[in-house]
Length: 298
Image 1 (cartoon, rainbow, N blue to C red):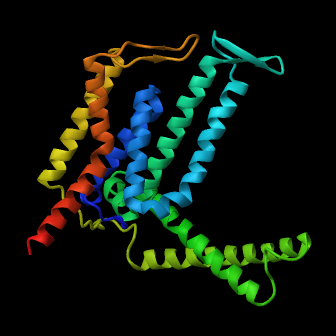
Image 2 (spheres, one colour; image 1 turned 120 degrees about the vertical axis):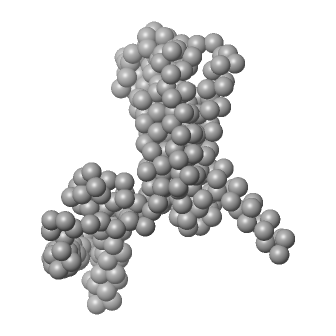
Image 3 (tube, rainbow, N blue to C red; image 1 turned 45 degrees about the horizontal axis):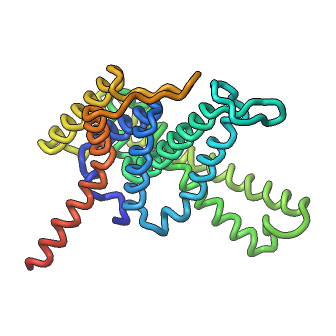
């Protein structure tokens, strides 16, 4: 799949947004190693499905660098823990801080990958559908910012290419010349952004934005499959949260690393959590399988 219209993205925006809030929220709050590992694998698999191997090769090195940074620097600056392995300039390096750094790196990687798929699936019109009635001004501003950033980078490339054509390359020459050419590009970009903001505000005023009684149009309808997906997601989330609060999945990193013993119930909870994380990928693969079957039967 190479676009943002896979089976999961065709669900109602409320369900899609709720899924991303669930996977990101659980990954951030509950630092259990299995929870984080399943979340990371599910996020990576879905990003690969959306962007393909070529897309994942471009963005994954940055994610991996941040994960390595968190894993290495946490034991250097965090000296909590009882199991001292060695000393770094008279500072203890503990096993617990290393394990906590690995868990933190998994959490960072999972959250970043989930946000990559979120940016591809949750478009601005879907965000407006979810929050347009509750917080209309803030949701509109947020969606405009998300839409403006890609346009800003594209416009910056165009301006830099035009400046390069007249001998004002920001990547060649002395440092003073590069700084002067870069400031010129920034000045042009700032002027373009201000003019675009004025044009947008005039257009919104002409269309009656802010007038009392003005309705909001949305092309999304809450259907039975959206209800089924929402109930399934809510039930799975309830199972995971109750199990973690009840101590079925427990992970203590300080002062001594401690995991509760594995049981059938804990593996069942991990399976439920894995199903939640894999839902977007499963829906996409199922849709492609049905589509291939229909094409073969023609």
